[in-house]
Length: 451
Ligand code: GDP
Ligand code: MG
Image (cartoon, rainbow, N blue to C red; front, top):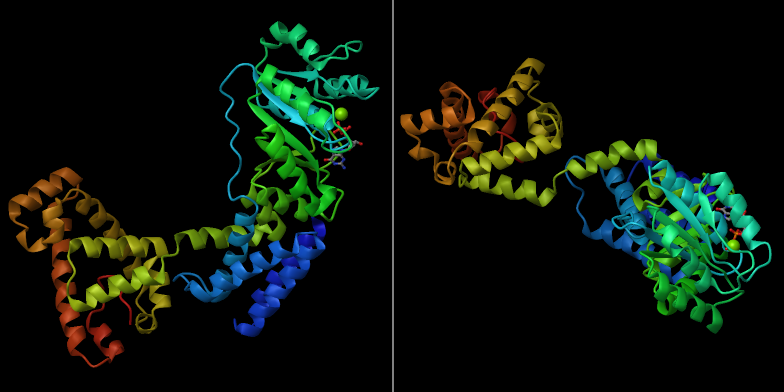
């Protein structure tokens, strides 16, 4: 497994959160320390580690827990999101429009260019593209035999010239034949370090081939040193993305990944083994998810996406309590409720409501009704939504036709609106005995208001 150790440490940390009784400063400090230790062991740059953990701390302090999430879940979500952001947020999109689409691989000796060219050939062949390899490493003896072998494994055609020492000439000789392919992967020569003659060679190839993508291949085992390398290549060779290889064999891969992200070089693929299939299209979200143990996380993230912000809920609640709400607000409340899950769940979350023990059937009907009202409201004009008092028989008739709801459903909605308004007035009058008051209105609950 890639970054086994880092994954195990982070999973252990999250486990700690899950089993903690309270979310307090002590737990948060421990969490931050654990994450720092895990990242440092993975050779992430010290400054970067502190930036990252400070971001986490800041978010914990500033962000309110969205309703629908527990404090612990919110904490885990913050850790997940921060890590994803540090790894570049989004998956790099490969847009293969042109034919032939040239992908050139550049990098130092032994970084994994030739191996990756074969892996890419297989990757794109599997996705239905007609792929060819072009071997331009004229520098190293036996380089041509290696790429021949790799092409055989990927089952693609390879173009090379074992005698020619000028890569440009090789390209020019095959130019016409290459134009028959969808994708051409160009394997180039490397050096021990980024040198002037390597830059010159890459530049002249860049000029002649004008590749659609120019991927820098970096070995993950160099850890945070990847930053300098990525920056240097980025500056001098117009790199469009990075392939980080050997992620399977190193504990320092975390350092390499975060370093590339800092160097503003998007990671496009990662190499996760020596075999032809050991290549992954890098996706920060999926990657972090796996590190943290995706099984548990998936459900949580789904929940977090749907949870509404406390402020939003409070705004609605305030409006509602002031009696300044119209159908649009009622609609918004309904939408908010939908987001938070079933009515039943909301009843559980609001202390005053949960004590009512409403029968399940009633709650189910209520939800069905809400769905109908929503449809009806979509056929109303802005004016009607803002001022339901103008609703006449003709208007109701029109809305009924437009929404396919029968008029009684629409009348019920308006009735509900009036009742809610009345209820708010009473609520304002009462001095807080919620339970009693709620009982009076069993079955007429307008939605989610804060107790
Ligand atoms: P090049 O000089 O940049 O063309 O590098 P090569 O493609 O020849 O790879 C150098 C060595 O790294 C070879 O022994 C490869 O098998 C190995 N290698 C490349 N990618 C990976 C990878 O993702 N994982 C592992 N474990 N080894 C890799
Ligand atoms: Mg090579």
